Image 1 (cartoon, one colour):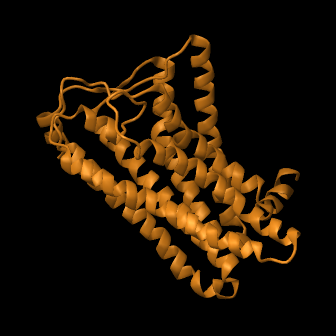
Image 2 (cartoon, helix red, strand yellow):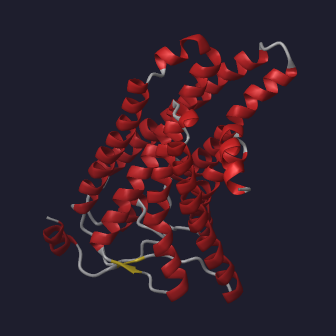
Length: 309
C-alpha cells in the first residue's frame, strides 16, 4: 500500500532540518543529544527493572510510571538516533516511508504520554483526597484498563494521522524544516487540500493535549485544597513532595508541546521551534527517571542497597 502511495504522491526523499551554528556548538550539541539518549534509555530501563523486581512498587502509580518509561524509550529511540546521525554526518535525507514511520511512532508516544500523565494525576488525587476508597477505585482491573486505553487510543489516533498524510501530494519543496517528521511541517509542504487534516489536528490538540492538561490541573487543585487542610506543616510538606516530581514533568512536557502545537501556524520553521521541540523530545524523557527516582523515597530505598553493595 505504501509503495503505491509513494509512487503516486511523491518522488525522492525529504530533507530534514539541522541546528545551525559553529563547529564547537555542533560538537556540544552532538554530545548533548548522545547524553540525552543514553540517560533516557538507561534511566528508564532502570525504572522498569526496579518496579518489576520490587513487590512493594506493584502499585497503580508505579505501574503507570513503568508504562511511561517504556513509552519514553520508544519515543527517544524513534527520533534521537536519526538526529544524531544528521548532526554527525550531515546526511539529512529521509524517505517517505521512513518519515511516515517516524511520524506514527512519535504521534503514538506523545499521545500516550499526555494520557499517562493525566492518569497518574488522577491516581494521586484518589490517594490523597479519598484515601479510604483508594484500593476500591484504583484496583488492578481499573489501572490496567486505563493503561490499555492509553496505548490503544494513541495508536488508533496516530494511525489516522499517518493514513491522512500518506494520501497527500507534495509540492516541489522537499525541505521539512524540522529535525524529525513533524505533522505540521509536512502539511505545509503538501499541495493537497489539507482542510480535513487541519480540523483533525485542531480536535486532537484539545482532546488529546489540552483536555488531559485540564484534568491534571483539576486533580491538583483538589489535592492542594486537601493538603492545605492538613494539621501540621511537616505533613503538608511530605504529601506535597510526593506530587512535586510529577508536577515538574507535567509542566515541562505540556508547556513545551502545547505551546508549539497550539500556537498559530507559521510557514517558517525557526531555530527556536526546534529547540523547544528538543525539550520534550529529548530532555523530558531523560529527566523522567531522574526526577521520579531521585525525589522518590521508595525507589531510593530499593536502589541504595544495590548501588552500595
